Figure 1 (tube, rainbow, N blue to C red):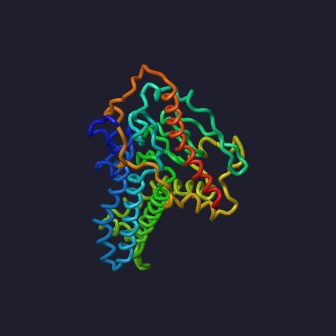
Figure 2 (cartoon, rainbow, N blue to C red):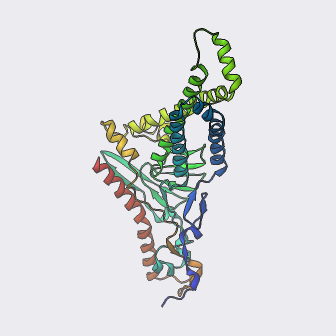
Length: 351
């Protein structure tokens, strides 16, 4: 009969140690650097407000309502996809730690033997995929084997599936599960900036007539609405960065590569990228089709707190039963690596 207190069962988010911020009692997960996300929202909102206050009424006055409607749609999509990107789990692989346990039976194992050096417990593992030999790296921080293309983010303190990068503009990780939303965010942001720039120029030069001096007409238009020129300059400057970023990620999508792999020149140094398909459309499908991805992080899953248990076996006693239990723990922890490896193989077979 297990001897435990009433508070032994807790939600996973209550015991999970991470750099991410958890909101609404585990219902929402955001990045580790929220000030960067807020700064990006401000940079997007300032020209948006100027457009709604000054440009939209001027365009309506010229009976160009359709242009305003198109901007509203693009603007809503930008806010939608940046919000989803930040709030969605990027593909975090839960840590293995002695602070909680998914299986109630394993709580009875003395904690002394769970704190053995991971390098002793785990042997090196390799994985054969598409003619390439992959070495599964062991993460000492998370105590798990990282599947191919996964990496540990020091800012968020998590291992992430198909880790692309920790975005400095939104302060969150971009990985397997939220990459498509990040890509759509920078796509619609690029489209919005190009659209605002072009509509502002059309507004400035649109009503010119040949019988009047063009310079005077431009000055007259800008005197009535100087914010048109300000918005055009703002979007022109920032579009170099945003459109360039979208173009770079489009290249990564069609070549089935991550930002992390590109910057480290991983496949250039070692060998040809085994994840890249000859068919560009299959690359796009494989990279962006994350809707059906398995989610390993369940913040509101019940776990067991070892501190709430009175273990019947003292930690100073060593016997064969405890050693067998320790082997059970090792097998249980290796299940994460096996599940992730199987998932990766399934994706490759489908392609």
